Length: 303
Image (tube, rainbow, N blue to C red):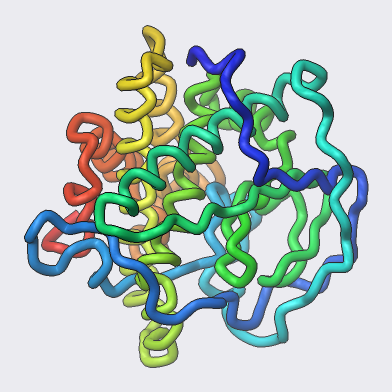
């Protein structure tokens, strides 16, 4: 990915080295109701009208052995008194620069998408942390992987995850890393469009299997949104040979079936809450090939 020398987002908080007590993720992380609508191109049941689910959305929750859906119940959201330190100057920390550039590109793309329907795009903040972090959704640590918290509209990532992505999950490459960020930003878009708050309203009436099934559709839509961003990056001449394959491989390596087989030797489909490897690759590729957010309706028919 040709990212060097490009503008870095200003919406980055650096909390690395600050730590924080762990109180467990819990409570209602939904800070919005209703929300903005992405243009649907005249299609019925467009992105903004979908019924969805939020799971305090991490890439690799299954590695922790704890269901993300279970984390929605009980307890009050914690508040954080942590303050951000100043980001390293550009050119001093390559990985920080990389994250800032990728987020800036997502801000530009989603700003254009929202502007096309006469709406502003409230940009999310990305929080860099190490070890532990307090959020509006509760406390978390590095083992949860990257995640989005709707309660404060922030994406949280311990950058050591990228080593894990490469070494443990066999998904190296800077475009694989960019895919992770674009996926989490996709959850922010879902929060703004009302998909996530609507689930929070309905989730008490859902059984575990139904909640898991909706979670899969949410995650696959975020994968599709990440693919749309990858298409946009290509239009900006940022994509190099092999980049698409890096992202596709990452989607493959973090599918529920692949993760469960790696962890326990077999897969249990009814427990899937992110989608199979095949599903994740399919929806990322759909977004990438079409570059159209209206092709990301994972709630219409089978996925």
